[in-house]
Length: 113
Ligand SMILES: [Zn+2]
Image 1 (cartoon, rainbow, N blue to C red):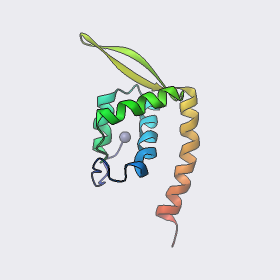
Image 2 (tube, helix red, strand yellow; image 1 turned 90 degrees about the horizontal axis):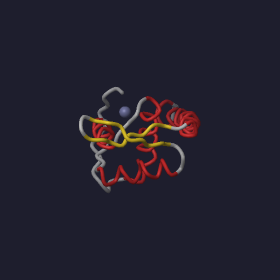
Image 3 (cartoon, rainbow, N blue to C red; image 1 turned 180 degrees about the vertical axis):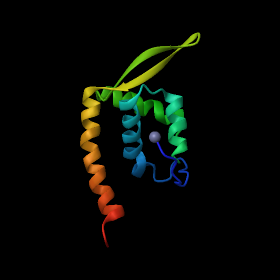
Image 4 (tube, rainbow, N blue to C red; image 1 turned 60 degrees about the vertical axis):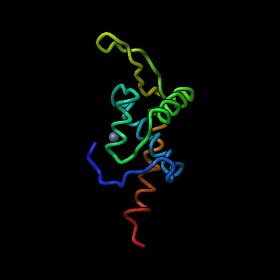
């Protein structure tokens, strides 16, 4: 999770271009540890993606509906919060996506033009 120097993406700016990256980013973290909505909003902001909870929560729900994430309630002090973990299906999808990203990375960044 190294700090990158991306420009901050404002809502609406090229959002559809980055939405897949955001999904993969979410899946990546959910495969490593349980994630929760606001924590993920902060993590994405750290990487320069300004995404509101109102956008992220439906995205989490959609990934859960697809079977990539599984939510559960976790006690947080006196209250409960909803956390998400990647399912085996989600991890499999992430592995497949990684090879696509590697290929794209190679073409975008490393290949001689
Ligand atoms: Zn990250």
